[in-house]
Length: 300
Figure 1 (cartoon, rainbow, N blue to C red):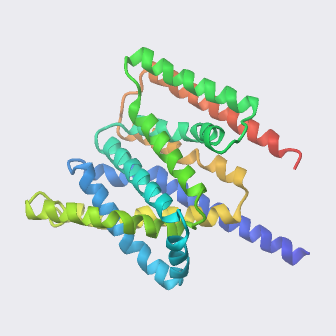
Figure 2: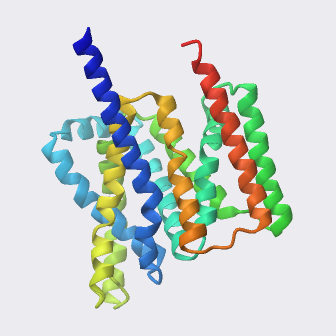
Figure 3: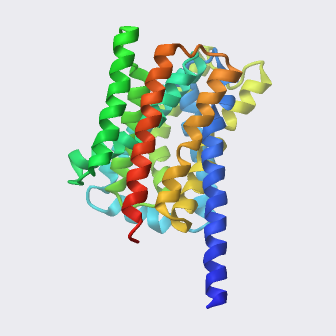
């Protein structure tokens, strides 16, 4: 029994380390994209897709998971859902890259703070899940924060809402497809790569591409975009299998918190009083949401 418990503790410890690594990488990703300011977000996205495929392909080959890929392609409706998830995550990536490279780091972090609450709403609308009263209260409080932003600024924080919506839709698509993280990412990049390659070739022919530019730093960052995309996803997949889901849910706030702190104190984006009210509503909503989850787990 002691040997079994030590194995369980070891798995939990490695899962926690993988989860921390994944969310830390996602939270600091803004530091990776920021030096690419001046390069169009669509070009960065195209490089991210192509180099992600180049990164994931050897992993699929080495781990001998092509059977999972073939099974996913042959399953009725699976390829259609994977195509939808590929298009949605491409939109999410492009929006995030555009936000970071155009000085909207704070609003980008807002999107990922809202994301857990949008997930609850998606579960209610599409999966028949019944949120608890405290979860409804959290959603209402978050909506109030967004409404305050609209009243104060006179416009909807479209970037944050779009990031939250696209990532929640992506999660919904992947939840309905029984494909693991690595084979799923491989299929998504395979689907997106032809368009991405054509776009990069067009830019190169027109002399507008930055991959072979005189700036070696930009070239290295563009080529490394596949690595910084794939590694945290694989770490997250490992963490999800080796730790409690509630703990993983709490860890997800690490990423937008890091992004918020980087936007405020490293990139010196203005945090207005109205923005602080919006973020305060979101943070309070997340506290209520987390407390609701902890209460649900208490009898267990």
